[in-house]
Picture 1 (cartoon, rainbow, N blue to C red):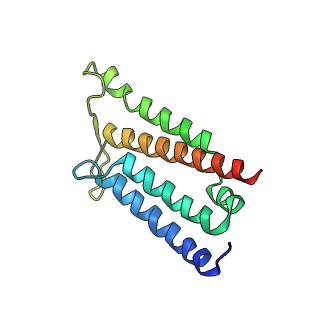
Picture 2: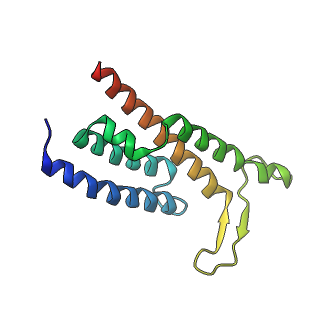
Length: 138
């Protein structure tokens, strides 16, 4: 059943929830949060949008197939392990790079790994949601 109120609210909530998921992703190094929780919140935002507007609108707004998001997440997680192997450190030891920008500071491989987990969780959850919605359509 279509609801104009839910449809309008979901458009605003999508942006708000995606910003909150980015906050959780970036906060996850020092406090609770991280890639897994951030990815789940982002997927929940798209699920809410799907419930309010239908599967076709949700697939249009995502713009990227979930398989590509999953692939990007896996690649980022794998790439985050390479610097420790190159420098001779133990596997998955955090390596930090100074950006030279005072506001950003140092960026490290843990952030890259968290970003990979974020995309992986988002892609898998979207794939499940879209698959169930397509199955329900037929």
